[in-house]
Length: 458
Image (cartoon, rainbow, N blue to C red; front, side, top):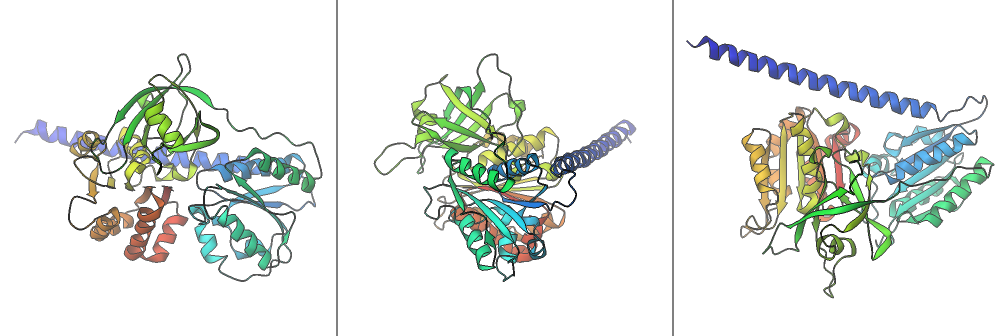
């Protein structure tokens, strides 16, 4: 018997256990620190003014814009001496609204009029009921994009529902398209009236910075779909690399449309030294290229200046899910956000990762195939890839998810979190319907409430 080999195995096992305990401790510490900072920020919004009733500032946010505006709104009220409490819509119930006299709602819209993920339970459980809200005075700031048919759809629905319950509007709903400065100034103007002061701080969004187009690679020559490119961006010489987290976005200004930034999921982590993007080249019916995708994939030359800013995407970060098993589901260029999560997890030696990814043809559309295969070989990743056009019957990620239902249920019962990235129409909606089939509507709602079901879909 080779005692040296046995001892080595015991030492390796002990090392793995210690490493796992350290990771768990780090996750617990990080969550404690996050709660402490959130409590500190919330406490700072409540000035010591006896007899002054607090305002509710509630938000429905997908990528973080509405949440940021909600905090700015609450701080503005605080500056004017009005106590405010801030909450995502998902944490409000009917009793909260019926006990509230003053409220401001900042809401974005997802897809064609849908609520953001952190408002879906509120829409299902609260907005489907009839309440007496005659005591409530409220205002609504609705965020959206006029290019969508149902512009500001969820904000409009919320406003109509509040009115139908007897709520009294403090001022007409303000609709904002793509962070329009004039509309946001109108919101600040209304805040100055309700706060009783004209001395309000300016709201300054982070400035765009100049980056360099450092690399570009066409990943799917010969594909039946539009060309997809791997893009690498780096700061200008002498500029430090800023910090970001897996799940975050970049906003890019194309020269042809400086007023309307386009958002892309970051496909890398700071340890890569560059921001990586996975960009599908958009082509219109007349053959012209999409404004931002055309600029990044074809029109900008290597070393060209790219104006961008990093946009934290709190709802799609790992945060409390960093140590959990992770099921990553996506299609097309949605692989970008999932790749960043895999990189972050593997860097921390977290191995319970399962990727379910769909595209058209394995021969052309297997993005990052060598990288994924290497992680598989290391035992860090399970990969199920679905290529819809490689068999007579079309198969998609939701079909693979359904075929693996027993394993999906096992992972969920073992505390797994689910992250979905890719197209809203078709993929994301079908994935959610399949999850409902597997664990039921209440099961999906429990995952949402626990922060274990998160989406970055478009």
